Length: 82
Image (cartoon, rainbow, N blue to C red; front, top):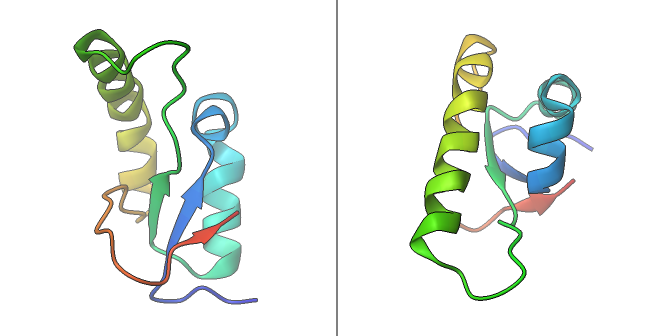
């Protein structure tokens, strides 16, 4: 399966725990755009949860950018879960 020109969705936990594997998988599938498929939270989604998620995504942003992979969510057709 190739995902050239497609956006891939990865679990938030994978983005946190094994970003190098996410990058390798995206490259192997030919995708240059990924998104976090979910932001885990136990209760309601609060501003605090959103701030923590933003901080987590910012940590992963530089390695993704260095790998030539975009991490923005364009909400377009063609998102595939990996």
